Image (cartoon, rainbow, N blue to C red; front, side, top):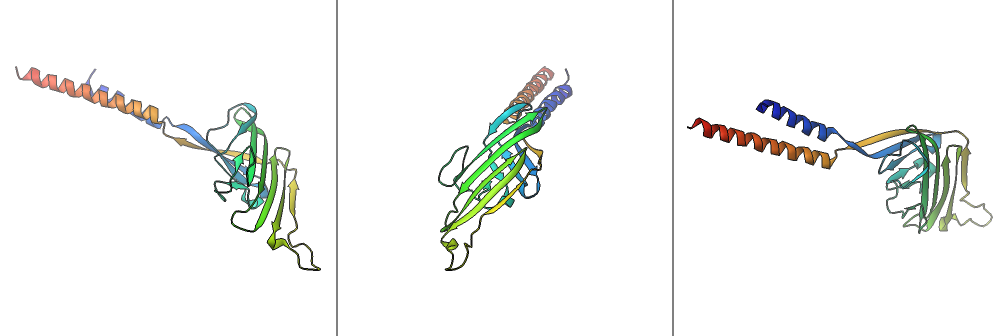
Length: 205
């Protein structure tokens, strides 16, 4: 095999391994009026799965109010996904069929506004059968003046409209494949260098 062919094969191997990116993360964009938002997963959802529970790296439903974001609006809110601690918790479940989201059930339960004496409580559900949320502010700023109504009335909203999910993949270079290809390329170059050295020695006799 000629040197050019060897170099060509090694270059192709490096190129293929470098661009064979594995989708390590996936951002799901939800569209449905005030319930629009995004959920970023560390790994993509399976092609087919029923009630598949996930713990997002980030989520943001800003239109729902304070507390409906994690690692975005309030990175120090203290969310423990799937559980409750001081400020809030959230759970996310998806069902998929042939690579499409067929059903979902999201619950966000938040209480607290760090650094203030007026807190916000938010309870939201986002599902394939409809959405709802209740937001309530309470604390020192909500104390009514004598003879006046409570200035912090709860805010509620709901609908029965089925939302739409769009997956946005974020591919990353696979370091293992790229490293293996680089090693192969370096080894091939060493072989070629050895051939060139041997050829030089042969021509001197």
